[in-house]
Length: 297
Image (cartoon, rainbow, N blue to C red; front, side, top):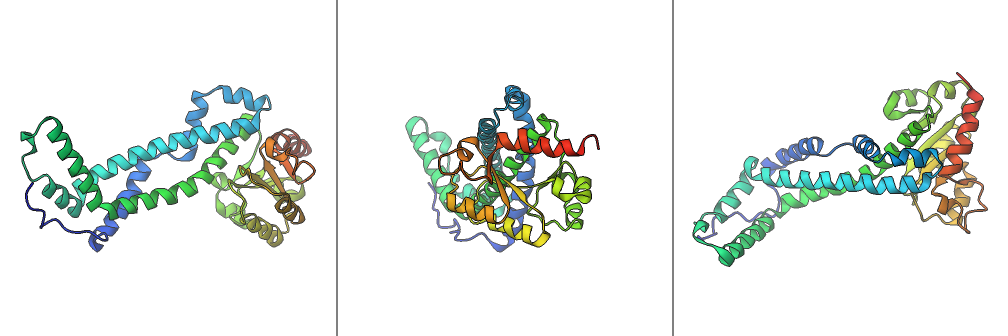
């Protein structure tokens, strides 16, 4: 292989390529990774059995299974995004192109068999190592995207479950954040059943909902929302499977109704907590009682 003394040592991405890479990541993510709602719709279309299971009352397991399937679909999209973006770094950014051109600056067509294989492995390894700051930036973007995507996926699944059961609802994505803001509701509130209009007429006969895949300390933000808006209570839908009885009691003190998987809500440590209910109880008891009040409005 020719001398590599002219290959730049990249400790950080050159300033003039930072913005270009940010733009590429944003553009390619939008182009190659479907949003949560698109994937959820695809999964439901290809797995019609979920409709029957949800209508039949098997909700908790359906939600857990859907989260896993939808997440796998997202990861497949992420792989495509990574491949195409890494390929196009060479075509679009000067430094990765310079590095790879120098590494390939020999006649490897003369090699064959094991020698060719070993040389390709060397080139791939060295190229990946030398453009690592670019790879790190892409990986960091993926990490941040995964954090927000988990919540959006859970939210999209819940809204699809509402649709399966023909439940009316308004969400911030549906009617716009401004509508919720005008009601005095912050971004912590994700949805209102049956509608914003119903909330304006009689808020204690609506279900104000928020969704969090994991509770940790973030449930306190929901408590602050209740205190600020004077909402009677908030239903906090979660996929968290680690809810302690002490945390459940704290949330009860703040009028937070936690909606969890049935095996969590009905576990020995939580079954006595009246503010911890299963998705089944929420969907087939609490929501119908509210919708019955509104009748045909």
